[in-house]
Image (spheres, helix red, strand yellow):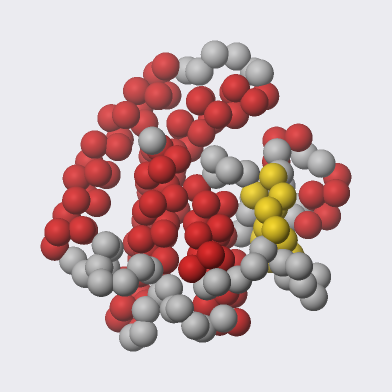
Length: 174
């Protein structure tokens, strides 16, 4: 059975879970509290980051980008990165924008302050960090609005990996 080590409030884990579901692939979920730094998990991903996909043949795939590219290559039905090079390039660009810019300027703060501090009991959230995330999300949401109104690369005629990345990151921020 295909297994996904994930953390429910991780946008990268959410992206892979939805991609697997869109590909109609069966998988088992194992919640990984990555901050506990379990030895067994380090054998799957020495970087100690989720998600990690373990295929039925025991092939281990860490990192959401690598996993999603692998899924597109191995399971080309229900394509999530488009059917032309231009479409694929623009979808990858938006996935990268969500996984890097949106994450680093919004979700990284929120996840650390609101989620990891709670689970690790390292103290109260830093309100300044939360204010930074709140300030940063405003122009990002304006950009997302532009993308949905003016381009065909987000919220278009069919679901893409860009839509999945957007939903994963926005839902975690919410």
